Amino acid sequence: PMEPLNGVAGVQMTATTIARLSVGDRPDSDVLLSILPSSAIGGLGMLGLDRLEDQRLTLNFRDQLLRIEASRRSWRDPDDVSMKAHRRDGQLTLVDADLAGVPVVAFLDSGAQNTIGNMALRELAVTRSPTSLWSTVPILSATGQTISAEIADLPQLRVGGLHLPNWPVAFADLHTFRMWDLLKTPAILLGVDVLSRFEYVSLDFARAEVRFRLPQRA
Image 1 (cartoon, rainbow, N blue to C red):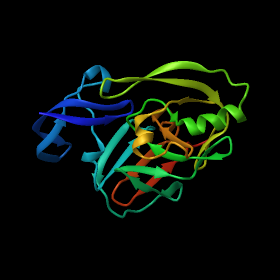
Image 2 (cartoon, rainbow, N blue to C red; image 1 turned 90 degrees about the vertical axis):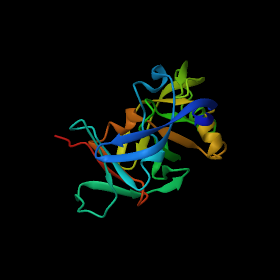
Image 3 (cartoon, one colour; image 1 turned 90 degrees about the horizontal axis):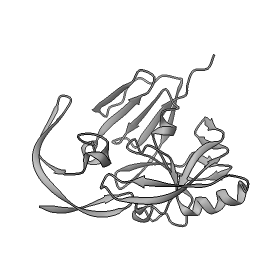
Image 4 (tube, rainbow, N blue to C red; image 1 turned 60 degrees about the vertical axis):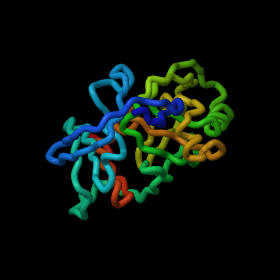
């Protein structure tokens, strides 16, 4: 059967199938899977937020490891930066972020290659960085749709205690921002380009909490 699937570029009707899915040692029966072009998702499959409910996802960029485990209270390293998050359609939202001093609503998206801001944030970025050079790039959605974006190197992107000077940020009128009613509020979707600057990022979907480890400095 065909089912609507939301992507960054819009809604696309996609073919679906029911199958048994095993992720690590966690098998699930009768899972509804959308059938998407491998060229769009970058491989043979992509794990969605629906499979991470009540789980903790840890992206360890230092050791090149990905861990999915049950959410539970555990011993915490004092070097970790822990922030409470808000749930929005299953996604975790942070508020401790800003671009050139402008507070932004920040989403963590481990499936996004690049960091993308909404058009409300673009208006502020143009005003605060008038000398930035802009270019046009396409953004490919997992549904196979594409949308045009404008990208520029912008100063002073901060996420928690991590400061990234002159970081490339794309801006587009994403369907995702419309879904979350974030057209007028400055918002940014943090992709793997930013997340990988940390030693690791842990997203606890059950506890609505995000933990970072800042890179160790000599």
